[in-house]
Image 1 (cartoon, rainbow, N blue to C red):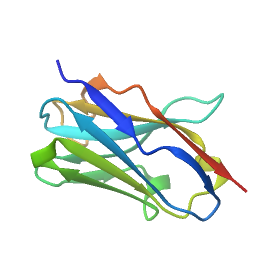
Image 2: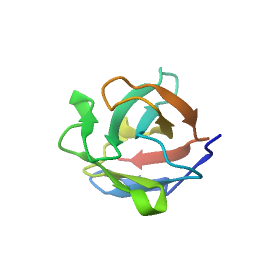
Image 3: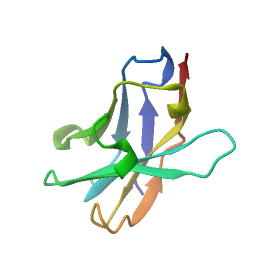
Length: 117
C-alpha cells in the first residue's frame, strides 16, 4: 500500500502563488491532483506520469503546473495567479493508470488552500 502525504497549503492573497507537495511511500505510474471547493464536488486538476506525460483539466491549464521528482517519490503542484475561486482542499492521488485513464488507487488526506481577495 502506498501512503501519500500532502503539504504546502495555506492562506495566500489573490494573485499569489503556492506550491503543494505530495510525498509517496512508494512508486506508482501516475500521480495526480484533485481539489474540492467548499460545498462542491471533487474535481480533477491534473496528473503526471512516471515518464513525464501530463494531463491537465482545461480550466487549470496555464496557471497550474505539475512536476515530479521520481527519485524522491514526490509530486508538486505549482499554483499561480490564484483567485478566491481556487480555494479548496487539494488532494494528491496515485495509481496504476495513465494520466488519461485516471485509475487512482491511493489518496492523501488533503491540504487546505485558501485565497483571499
